[in-house]
Image (cartoon, rainbow, N blue to C red; front, side, top):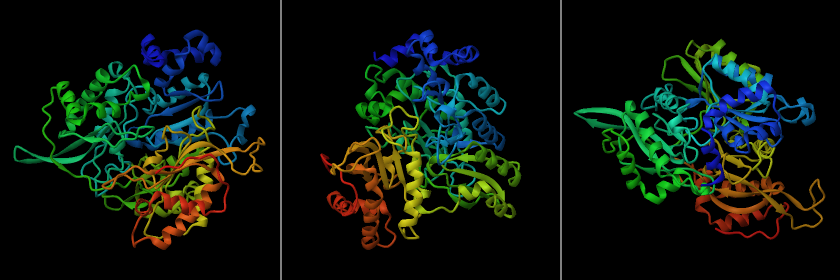
Amino acid sequence: MNTVEEHKQEKHPLDVIDDVYDYAEEDLSFEEIEERAGGGEWERLKWAGMYAQKQEGYFMIRTKVPGGKLTPEQAEVIGEVTDDLAVAPEEYGGEEQNELWGDAYLDITTRQDIQKHWIRVEDVPEMWDRYDEVGLTTVQGCGDSARNVLGCPAAGLDDHECFNAQPVIDAVSDFFTENREYANLPRKFKITITGCAHDCAQSQINDVGLVPAKKEIDGEYLYGFHARVGGGLSDGPRMGSELDVFIRPEDTVEFCRAVAQTFKELGDRNNRGVCRMRYLVEQMGAEKFEEAIRDRTSLDLREAGENLTVGYQGDHVGVHEQKQDGLNYVGFNVIAGRMGGDEFAAAARAAEKYGTEDASVRLATDQNFLITHIPDENVDDLLAEPFAQEYSPDPGPFSRGAVGCTGNEFCNYAIIETKKRTKRWARELDERIDVPDDIGAIRMHMSGCSASCAQPQIADIGFRGETVKLEDENSTNAEGDNIVEGMDFGLGGSLGADNEFLDWVESAVPADSVIPALEQLFDAYAADRDEGEKFYEWCRGVDNGQLRSIMQEADAPVARGVAHGD
């Protein structure tokens, strides 16, 4: 049994929630917390949604938002709590600790969560009390349990939706949250559920992905779900395997429970490196995994019916008509998902001011957010709000598709800084590169390490952090040596009918070389592309060696000692 698993067996991880109240009341330091509870407490605190930052004494806290759907009141509380509590101390720069965002900001994640930084343990009970008043939680935002359940951020709004799956998302989330029987799984367990034909909830890269389907039963066509299992990214990326099952909406909670039970019983708790459900599905095969699920439920799981998924959208930026007459939702672009708590609270108040009583704030998997149920006559007033100027619903193509993980600003695993770099690069690329009007977003995803929190494998352009030794001995970084931040450079990823992970075309590229290399690539793309051809499609049609040659024509710093492979 590995060390983390031993810590989980010492004490049920959900018991840590009571511990947090004690630590807060006694105002314990990190050293005192570890002295009292042992090193395993840092793992168990994840079940409270708390990660220890690299800056000792402070936590990143993750708020779960099932399906990304928030009431304006909930969104306002999140923004206000951020503004009040997610505050850096003077020793780390205070209000000036980040030159782009200042202080008291939040991050929208690729799993429709909200993350806040600089939270002290003594402030957590106040956060939880304010959350309880509006029905929010951080419980199991992290840890080896069912994470936030994903869904289409436009659930209930779009004409291309087969049915509204948000009630199913809520039911599954309610079942797993604080459920002690399924809160100690071999590893984290990621579920996505959508009734949308465009699969913006990314079923292919989750442990469980439920997508819309229909089937004739007893002479009547019924809507339900088809299932994919064993998808994921990180070091072992894998597209989910399709099961031969049709799941009625009312059976979804039990189906997900049976999958979790299968993982709980059969997952390898000894080797944490391969203890994700995708490895179990790969080892067993989809058919045997399906048999194992059927053995663990009393459901009469029918064979699959007609698949209703037609593609992948994953982008809701802009003004869109809802299927409800006279109403609209507006998707705002938040580059790398980061914005001020005061700005998020302002967006929530705008939703309440300009929307109907059904207005909501929705978080999207591309780190953007939507405001819904805006009458036609109120759209212009919403777009005139100050926050809408910074988070424009009409951004450039690189800004529109930019995703960034937490990076080495706070994360112990990240090798490079990501948030500031993603925002600066996206805006610079929008100014320097002309992208054809029919292309839409250019998805540029940056992860600070190989953990893939920014999902680089499914992007047009993907990066993962590396350190790089420069070829020019006279080129140095701020510390005076020739080791600089860099990244592996991937091209050609996508989800949908043509889903395919990108190829890591070039390794250990110095960060200062990336924009010149992209300019070379897009010049070649503009000259060679067929009409309507997307950038990722063009990249797939060009040999990787040729793509490298194009990038290396840029006048930019060069790494040395780098091995390249297709």
